[in-house]
Length: 298
Image (cartoon, rainbow, N blue to C red; front, side, top):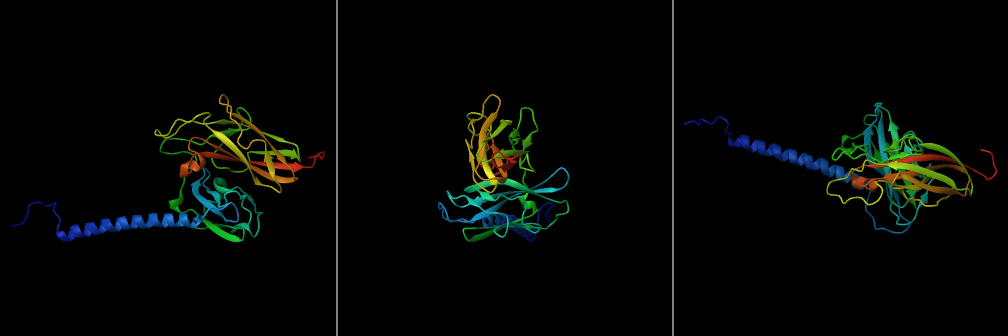
């Protein structure tokens, strides 16, 4: 007698369904493993030393710009605990094809630095790739940069809680700079041994995960560093105090060698460095500084 339950499945059909689900799980696991392996290849593990270690570029991911172009968001990992490195653009610091200069840093702070610059690629970039190769302390590393869908990031808004990066201004009510850097926020002039004032005003939406501890003090901070330049830069205080009332933060930068410099100011909110690994929410601004000799006309 035939069963009247038309929704029942034969054993063969149930077996096929189980196989299908198993294949789907295996496929998902494969893509996750591939993603993790690619990330590990970018930032290989090594014992921590004060000096003598390599520097690796870190491809944070990509996002589309309003004009249809794409931004590749890039940081780096200097494995040295203390050693900082000056590596000029050229054979030891190059991005190809189209380089070697594509706006990358030439001064490398120690440890992990998140999303310090962007590379704009055209709408039709497609499946092309760029590669950033760095040779430091005799060790060469390279990292590919691409538009693989697995690497899409949202650095301008955390869709989970609606958090956005801090806003940096160079005068009250001035032009806002928010999120990854694109071009120069300002062009300044300075002279050797004469402190250059650096003053910004910071604002932030103050949003953070419900489970996070309330942030103490101002909702955002800023830290200054050299990004490029022929000589050392001394900051009066690289992490200036932020006025809790108006967000004003002031310091100075002093140069000992004339030439062209780029300074980087990174403003973090409660999400911290690298947004806790989620690529949101912090802001990087680049300043171009032309430094001349004392008494020289600029």
